[in-house]
Amino acid sequence: MEHELSNTQRLTSIVALNAVSTLAQIGQFALGTTLLPIAQEVRHASPQLIGITSSILWLGMLAGLLVTNMLTRQIGYRKTVLLGLVASSISFALMPIIDWYWWPIPAAVIGFGTGLRWMANETWLYRLAPADSRGRVVGIHEALIGIATIIGPLIIVAVGAFKPTAFWLSAGIILMAAPPMFMATLVPAVDKATHDEHALTAKSELPLNQSSYQKLLFWVGFGALIAALGGLVDTGLMALLPVYMTDVGFTSTDTAWMFTILGVGAMLCQFPIGWMADHKGVVWTARLCTFFAALAVILALMFGSSLHALAIAMFILGGTAASGLLTLGLVWATQHSNGAQLTSRMRQVSITYTLLSAAGPLLAGYIVHYVGSSSLFWQVLVVVMLLGLVLFKGTPDE
Image (cartoon, rainbow, N blue to C red):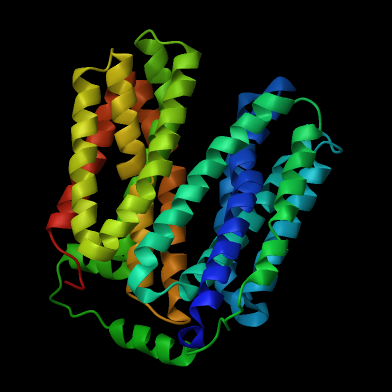
């Protein structure tokens, strides 16, 4: 059905669904991942409870991603997104009312709603995007997501985390994401499902003589793999950068600026990356991102005591390794699938990205604890080199 849409219908739908993602991302993710730990800390919660609450948010998101495919087939994209928004909004509104000891429960629901909205809304969006410009659509979308993640912490700065105001703002912003959905043209989530599933099943017989690397790409997916490696860099760097900055003599204000620069790099670089993916291909663009990410890490390793050098490195890493690889993974998924099959491809990228994003802080924290914070950028360099190995060994579709 999406092939029969007019340009006006496509443009209106793309704008509307981008608005849904931007508003929902501010409330569900940007405030979910920052407000909850800060609000618990000012209420003197233990580090263990803060960590449990943050982890459960991610686990709830993973659960949402896992069931989205089934839900969209049963009730469609719009109702699935709406269910995710309402669930997260109600959970935020209830949190100031209940004892913060019980916050892991609504945190799980917020994450679950985020997973539903993320998977259903983005699949809907990318199915409506013209095939020859999906890279640019993904790039614009990820840039807007970057803006949302900057706005979320600023809301906490403005209203604080102790009073219920921030929670109610979160709930309200999430609900504001619902109306634009009704401007977007609906497409059935089950069209061509049988054909697509049979195509995937036919491809599922992997020849026995394939290498371990080819088997990995077959089962995980090339787009999912490069996106997940980006998530590993992003979350590990975000979690342990404050430790590194303190050890080399910088203040918490300096660290906050580094996070801001990381986010600005992520926001500004996504459309150019999507444009290059459309014109030069995903693999070529990913190789370019890897090259610049490697230069950024080397700069940080050589001049890590210079705030200006770190700022340059953070900007480049934010645009290339952190967010750029997720953008490219999503572009790969959209370019190598059509119709209802796109849901499965997007689900593959999202789940793999979420899993490695959750593993990033655990792995980086363990190494930093035993080796020292000086190992942080060496860890990033190892992941970037692994990414380069993946990219230069080729892909299953080349």
